Image (cartoon, rainbow, N blue to C red):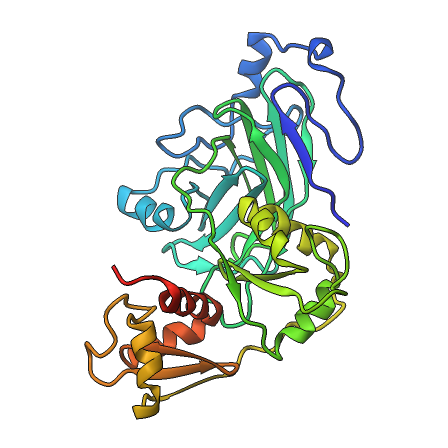
Length: 353
């Protein structure tokens, strides 16, 4: 089980050691910090500062300054809101969230690449603290059929670190480009801004959820089993977790990432095969569907009135129906069915404005 470690500008703690209190920490001299700050790759424009490699581990000579064009930078940061670094043949987008640090991979043309075979190490050093803390990121796969990009993630609490107060070095191997299988780069820490917090939606249970419930086994909020009724299925972005009762829903909504991480750590690796993709079928809506169409009113994909493009389509996902405005929306539902199931359910219960 991987334990989440927290670090801040007063103290840092990992699985192996606990640092002394702030008044006992050794303060680095300006000359020492300047020496640490030489070399490495600069963070992209807007985050400022030069990158610093940890002591005795200077960046490799092949590291280069992150300097994509404004159009290239917008193409990626508009999606994940992170810092973009250019390697020899690949781009790396680092997204610092309060409790996890993600690395997304892109080709030289900024086409998303899979991080499935990638691994490595993340080294973090807070200003004024000589200790370098090391974390091994894990691969974060996406659900079958999801259009979301996979990534590497290091689970570490950086919520108390101020922007610019930490240098981070990434040493990655197993990269997808055969001519750049490894890369090392450094940058100045800054929390990602403008990154939307994933909404937490309650979704209906289907027969396909049986395997996921059995694999999760316990509620991440209470740490108890699902022994007093059917669990409640929550959809966070494109990921699913189960809680034991309605009282746990609000806890997940307050900090969804923390509970997703807890479930990921507690679920035995390889204990079960990946869940089968949901069964999705689509047909033209008929007269019998009119009451359901009137109740939903809006296409959950295009956000337009049903009927604006002719007779709506009825898309059935594991027994639950969604109505969309045209055939082009069917593919979107197939790529992320849980998202649109939740959206359609909200549309049916929300008052018309």
